Image (tube, rainbow, N blue to C red; front, side):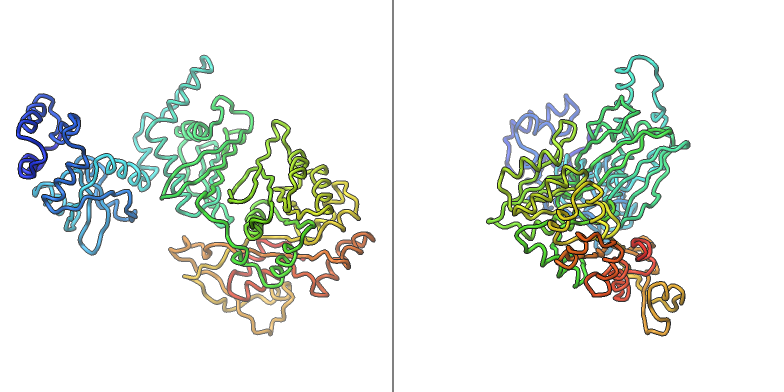
Length: 566
């Protein structure tokens, strides 16, 4: 349905931007086609949309701007129903007091403005904008506020296509299902909501009754949505198509990735599928390409382990290992170190699986095990390129460990990660891989163990009034000591969790001659650890966490959760 152009004929006549003959021809075409006058003018190359809007803007003193450049408060989108925004091609931009600024493709007449004013209870101010940009804004923002029950309610179109004919027919059915508007909206909602909530992962888990959606926020998984079974295949097919995965293969694991542009930034999603008894489970790792590598000094390390780390990375050669489970922040720390070392006179090469952050000035290599390009193969090639510093994403096998250790002994500074619970266990892990003790002791200069713990939300932080004596005793503290711990009560800022953001705990063991000699002599690791703690050479993860809890950064409960017992 075409809306009339308010006084557009008069504006064009007064502005004298087209001739009387051109205007008469345009009005004749408008009558024949039933199209709007503005559309006719544009189609016949008499005026561009920009020119028409500029003429109207100047004539009516209404600003002409681009809504996509506005930072929109999602809270004001609900002020105008989506069907009304599409009917009148309008979009809410900004609200101050009882005045609402809206973008319009054509100035609204007095009657429409009055009806809109009564409907939303606000005074209306108009700015002009292109119709296409307004419609794109409506699609983008209203998709974010629409709830899953609203999308799914009454949607008969979500009935799954059931067919047992040829595989290509089944594929076409899945593709068709994944492209239905409700499915697209659901997937968009989940992706945008996860980003808004600072999630690191999205878990899509098929169950007997439907699809469970969970987000990992600050290291903890939270249940977010339970979607009906009728939408399961369409959603999973949509994720597969986005990730360039084979939609016909349901019984083998697959890996892929895709990226989207949202909220003025580019987001990468690393996708992994796994077959389960109820269907394929997907985990989507969220990587913000626009985020910069955090400075080493800003990671939140305590003074003692940070000083040992800074001393070690200043060395010309040797191996530095970061240990800890998946998700403990090892890669982030290594990227921060490399960023600090990244100077014009240093040749730095990384071998990763996958490359998570791209840093200018580094040579970064993505391994491809499926074609035989492994960490070990890449390392051999790198050593022929005369590098000064090498970062190996992970030491997974004996061959990689052997090459890395030998490279550290011939003049390279090597960084890598290893999966062990604490720093001291790295010695045993490398020996178990078949590396000689003297090589392990000779090459290592620093071993770090790392964890990430949640920080208490500063908006609802409160002191703990009493603390159980048995817990204090377990922490090695006297009950009569004047200690103050804190917790988060829970508020809107932290989604009632009591925590917001994370900080790093670091356990750093300097491998000096004293430690090297004990490793070579096969001194039990527990004995080495006890001596290192007693002599102040090592602050354990638990004790580092305790110091942060006493400083009010985190809670005792969080420290117990992320650290192993000493």
